[in-house]
Length: 379
Length: 259
Image (tube, rainbow over all chains, first blue to last red):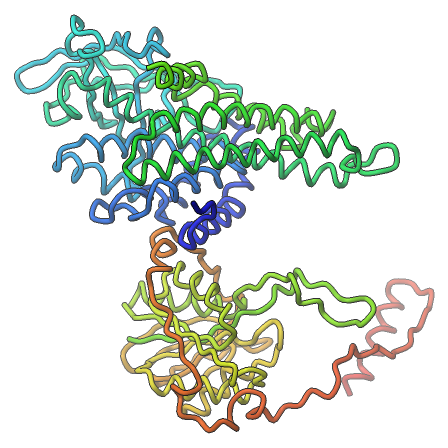
């Protein structure tokens, strides 16, 4: 059992860190303030071959692995959680299901462009009335001779409006319940498809989160992903992988927050000495740092299990549950150490706290992770 | 087209601290970086590779730890790396270094050699020019722009303080580059991920067929007698003057120095 990263992983980690420090950090506060999707950063990630890290080069990918991809999300999120989730949603929620469930011709059509970053990906499962209860899909796909006609809407879709390809879910047979759900690949210019209202959010405000509207969207049968009726299984399997990405995002947020705080408590003086000289600060930071390291082990383990082709659903749920809790706790406690200054937008800690909250909600709330974990335990 | 870039791993001088009691640089714990002028050479090579198609190799002489720097350079898209490392190469001054580099470069089929103008630790700017001399090939130092390249010539702009020369040079030749000439790219995922799959070719003393007294400390005519900070011993003049009179006074003083 070796707990250190391989030399390959260490080198790409330093590459991601350099990129995040030079290109992502300087924009973080601005895109949050302006609620602006950082298109220029996506272009830069494309130029550095970061948009298809874990996929084979034969499909335009980087020939890397899940751990390498997770290191990228972590390093981006250490400075900007918005940038972290753009990469995570693209890779885990769009490219990954096409790679796992797509036909050879679907892979050839979509993956080279998604992996090169020419196209950006998104995933549409959540509906106004189908959140945690994702089986309650109200979007309907009616089968016709040459394909399907889709009607309905999705909500809270990450990368919406900027994505070129969406993985969407719809009921093909309502009588079958979750076994009546099918997955589809939708291209942005398909007639009848529009991107609706953009959400105004608490955190990850540079990330684009919108409604998707399907008004008699005709999709040829070539756009069915996997078999008809297997959509729910595809969604759940995709989210297992996505959870490692969000766990890495949460880990990055927590890491970034404690680094900001360590620097701050060394220079902020009260009662004649730096506040880092007080035991309250020291003990608090010690507890937070320990949790961050525990989180890192859980997140990297889930990624490595996936790379080894072993079951990882339970471990991914634990990683996400613990990482998102840690991100929340670390940012709240770190903001407390910053005191009044931390509450202002002059320091990044309040943004990190706002960004952390979503990691307890999207790609399965913490409660869903507990359902997965306890389900495995009580089976 | 084969391009070789000469690179050096140097201490990050922006992170340097001085031992207050001895007045010397504290090297321990100082991170090592790729010499900035050499990074410009790497970037130029990668630009030429993309534009004209070329095989790019880096060569460094240094301790085994220099391998880390070479991996990072491979991660930027350079094809091959050579590490000249041997305890008998240690303590080399610029003369012994250029002798060793030239001996190795003679074993390669090279069209263009690029080197940073100077290293930020030694600041001699000698290794590139000496290497070209020992290889008997043309050289242009302080290149600020590479304009074009074909199988026989390269056209470059060489910087002087207030003007530039436009030069066409026969290949093979050696150019030294300025770090102001470009914005070096960082690593990219595809090349960084493959960097450890590549073999770094290790070259030792026995591979080069050089006499022992021409390499390392023994082959180095430079002898450091003493290192010290030169004290500035000019006095100063203090006068209360109007801006116009002050300017006149300063210009008169400067004129005296310029004559």
